[in-house]
Image (tube, rainbow, N blue to C red; front, side, top):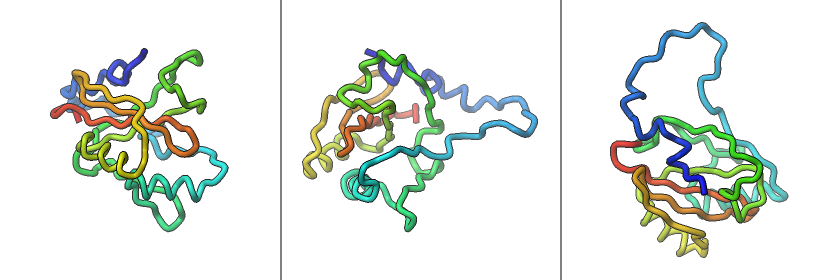
Amino acid sequence: MIHIRQLVPILAVGACLATPLPAEPPGHITGVGGVFFRSKDPKALMAWYRDVLGIGLEAWGGAAMRYDAPGHPPVVTLNAFRDTTHYMDPSTREYMLDFAVDDLTAFLDRLKAKGVAVLKREAGPDGNFAWILDPDGTKIELRQPKAGRE
């Protein structure tokens, strides 16, 4: 099984984030601008993300999540898995979402009160993790980074 801590080694070496990169000429990727996916009922699915996960929605129906929010990790991870991976099981989707949380225990208590089943919970050297499924069957990884590794 592959763990996110194997995929995000930069989180373990936060000092690397403070090291300035050499100047690059214009014309390069500056960050992840969004995550978009299909759903049979997009309005109902986004309402679930709002009502169950507490993600604020904009008037246009989607969420705008700030990078500079307090406690937000300084990086967004982009990584591909082998097509034979079981890491995203039981989801049959080709992607998985990962959300950082400030207090995993409190967040899971809120989810359980709303009837959301937690697939698994795990503590590791890089923080605490839990996995759930959304109503479309997309696996969602919730992580509370270890202090100092945001």
